[in-house]
Image (cartoon, rainbow over all chains, first blue to last red; front, side, top):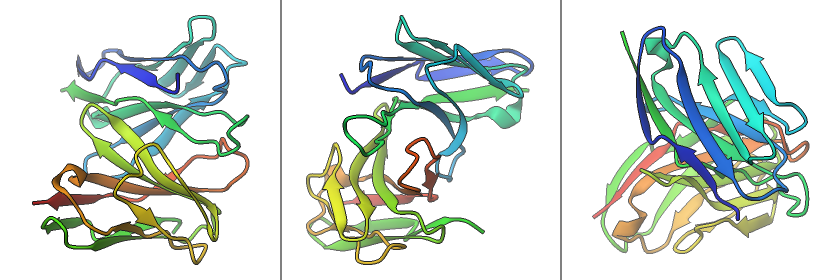
Length: 115
Length: 114
């Protein structure tokens, strides 16, 4: 019940296309859903995050869509660029019962944007 | 510059030889955590610390130890490393509250246990 399932494992997109990465969770106590971006040789860095009280959050070319009833959320990268080539992790956490705010990460998606 | 620093960045060693990976942060964060990253498994938490002298197990603590004697440092200790601990390790920190503060990650330590 603590898992976050992420798909696809890898994704190849042409420059200018839309990249879509999906995540699903089971624990309804989760109330914070961040996406992290990781470049080779670097640690993950926060890209964008959403709370379940909104269905969508947009920052530049990056959008999170959130479906509370389906317990799913996704990252959309519009006008994908070669510089977006990286590994993306979805994650979830709860401020509630565990009192630690522990992040549960998805399995990761390696995105390659071809010029 | 705000950062989390890990050392070493790369290490090849042999089974059973004790090793320590250091982690230091300069942001005065209370919360620190260690993760391992394996292909197809994402990032899994090994241990975390809510503050000085307060540590607790994550999801995959077997074979690892940690200590938190100072706020800025959170070393990861492998007392008797085994090949199944070959992995990419990340240290991270954030303020304790609010929980939704982003975690700041180091650049990783790639360990190979032969």
